[in-house]
Amino acid sequence: MTTVSSGAAVVADAIIPVPVELQPGEGVLDLRTVTIGAPDAVTARLAGELLTSAGAAVAPDGGVPVTLTSDPAAGPAGSANPERYTLTVTAEGVSVAAPERSGLLHGVRTLRQLANAGRSGQDAGPEAPLEVRAVVVRDEPRYSWRGLSFDVVRHWFGPADLRAVVDLVGSYKMNRLHLHLSDDQGWRLEIPSRPALTEKSSQGAVSGATGGFLTADEYRELQEYAAEREIVIVPEIDVPGHVNAATHAYGELMPSGEATDAYDGIEVGFSKLHFDLPTTEPFLRDVFTDVARMTLGPWVHFGGDEVLVMQPEEFGRFVVLCQEIITGAGKTPVAWQEAAGSAHGDQAAVAALAADGDAPAGAVEAGADAGHGAGEVPVLVEAGTVLQYWDTRPDPAPFLRAARSGARFVMSPADKAYLDMKYTPEHPLGQQWAAFVELHDSYDWDPATLIEGLPESAIEGVSAAVWTETLLNRDHLFSMLLPRLAAVAEAAWSQPGAKDWESFRGRIAVEAGAWRRDGASYHPTPQIDW
Image (cartoon, rainbow, N blue to C red; front, side, top):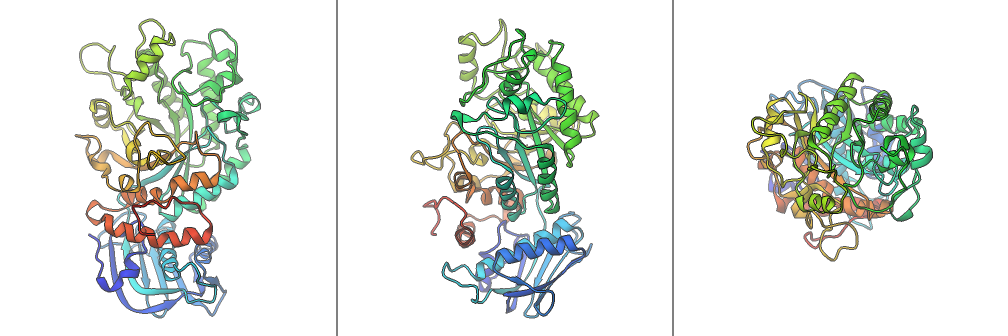
């Protein structure tokens, strides 16, 4: 339970996500010039970057001491969470203690928010005081996976934009950036064993927009940039649907042997691989082995969503094969919820495709329990595989079976956490197929109650998602992420009893001062008194 006194209103209104414990102290500290001490040069540099962005100047000596210390006793009493930290601000200086660098950076991010609040006025100049009130914060996250899923296919966002998103994710103590790197419109990652994927399919995007891709070197550099900041990049290559870019590059993946045409629309469900073609398995082995080899983090996402017209048996063979390839390459598989054997929530869309003749005779949607016959449905996902839950409409039974077999869950409910959904019917950007998602919608939910009967011990964490069919540039992107990403971050980090909508309304209004200072686009929802 968060402890806050009314005498620390500015302090309490500055921190997002809300911390476990906050104890106001006596006195005020001016952080205009700081001198940072840290366990290593990288941590010191990162702490300096965070505080400089809040308006502090970093000096080698003579500034207010900001001391970062490795300390296994840090954090809430009795905590063993590896990301725990303690931030202490007194009139004499600042200390951040944590057992690992992730906690040290979390503590500095909290200090940065306090400094932002201390200079929240839009007209405050560089010589104005950068005041932080005395406080002790002891904190830890609720879930270990706190992330954003980012589609860079429908519209391309290059390395500079990706680094900006890494920084934004980190600012709210999120630690995963899942990149959707392949789809019908384009292919966004160099695959050394399959060069035609980027040679032929990287320049496509929605409505003929300019495409692009990450070279292997750029991908490594992005991961290193994120890893320094304790953020893991999770690459997604989406199969066996959403594959038109692949079949456009390699016609041998089609029964006819002919490459498909390039696609720049936004429909889903019409493309698929064919398991029994002799070219399919070698393609998957090449691609996922290369992706695993190039990936620094422990996870590789193989998609598995919205394969609207495929026999369940064939889909199941893809799920089994992709897991086998990824685990054989030393990584942990991640997939969308359909890999558990879940039917797609919009059966009308499945029926429409079948009526159009896109489904083979006797086909039902991939993942549907129908067609398995009587008795217990086989579990396709292995223990440890991570399932990303996005569609709240299907029967929960497949998820409970998967959980009993050891699957883990990341919660990304589209009607709460899909941040490309329009705020309101009048909003000029985004879509509305899941819901209109205002800030309060993104704030007011509990990941532990989404799937009835799922034990909270099976939940790995939470991820927001943003799909870019209508988002053409960074301003568009950030205006959809902000302020809602901060709300999802609090759902991922903070305990339910600590959350409070009215408190969040005040804190996000304070936080917006930093967005305005930095020139970051955001949506000024009328739900907040800006």
